[in-house]
Image (cartoon, rainbow, N blue to C red):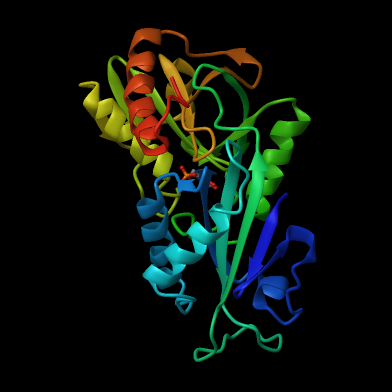
Length: 285
Ligand code: PLP
């Protein structure tokens, strides 16, 4: 069963009620975070909580719960999952419940939403993705995990309609990230990934990949790279909390990557150690 939570009330997900004056309805005015949970363990919980408070601060959204209380509520929701089943644990804070006005109230409490939804599991590290490229039309707050995701939804839909798994966004010639993932490349023995400016979300899985690459002795370079470099990369890697490492084997129908399989599998094995140690069994290889 999938569960929902709104300001402390828990119910089956479609029975939770949200007031129409919640600013999330009119403006998508809120921030979120999400990660995988299994048998009550929340993957990379500290990093996700840290990013959530950072997103709140950047948009001046009041903290819905202090960190200790938020952790307790997330663990309470994760504990509702069935034994040996994977879940997406998602939470958001919406700015306020208030009459519709663009300028926002500054002294109204925010609302906390949590959902726990069953998933098939973490995506296998060896299953390749096919992707499309898509012009990045998002605004300049991409470093904040806001609820305003329409351009990302349009890009993901374009990928789905092309029978692909993800869309790689670009601003002109510069690759930014995926519609709901980060994208990095391996080239001539280096791991190259876009810097964490306001064009990309500082993904927790991206951070895991950087750590894994360094552990494998690979030089990590955080810099912008072009579509031409993407197509010419030895390997292209998509990363997100539910698909921590997915090699790409086709971009816009054109074969790519597959030129540094040993390096890729070294990164994958260090990443797997990081994840397996949290869940206490070999869920990744
Ligand atoms: N970039 C965007 C735009 C995303 O929406 C996401 C995840 O939802 C990511 C990157 C990956 O972030 P994470 O690794 O923290 O899941």
